[in-house]
Length: 286
Image (cartoon, rainbow, N blue to C red; front, side, top):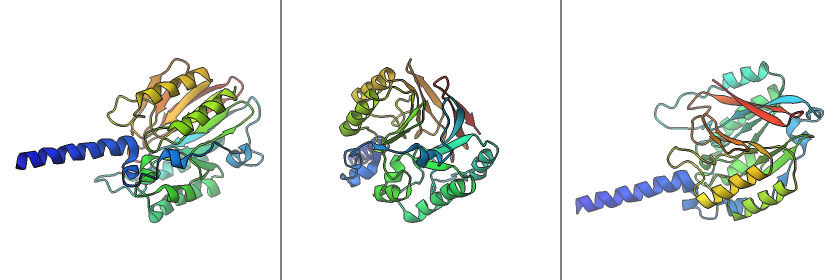
């Protein structure tokens, strides 16, 4: 009887772990908090809101984007290293061609106003002292313990599915916080791509694909459809987080990159955009 109980316990725990890292265990506890409810439309941001008035890249220019992911403010994992925030600040100080910063999700470890306040201090330093905007995509940890309302209230652009564009590029932030794009978001994304001939960068939290167990978009049919949309619609790069490691997947027409965690790998990434050639390149920094 004891063996049966232990086996059942192991099965239940394995299922919860799998569900949690693939579909976000917060949705298991709060079924109304899922991507179909979070996404109702594609929000179009103005370039001035993201780059700042008078700071929108000129046609044909070259500039940088600073990308951080999986910062995990409030982490209680044993042995969790300090977040190398000063390294980020110093890099911005020495690179005036950075146009904006994006956090790819898991800014905080779970939904908490107190923990979010620590992330807001980080954002405030970048925006008010370094004078560049911080935008966000939502991660599964951000949603834990009904964290969606906290994230939406505090993290610009206060919506999880959005786009903005310059003269030569388009940028899309997608909601993969529950481990799936969902039917509504995927449909809206496809409609937007078909009307947008510009080269594009895609930002998500969950990887499109990874060899690491239990951390990519789970539905193979959805993944395949998403890959094909990107291949057919001039996507140059998909930039993702979640797995806490560097990994590249070549999809032919574009590459998908998993970026290292700022907290657990001590790294961040810089993407250089060349609007004249319609190309994007990335460099890891540690």
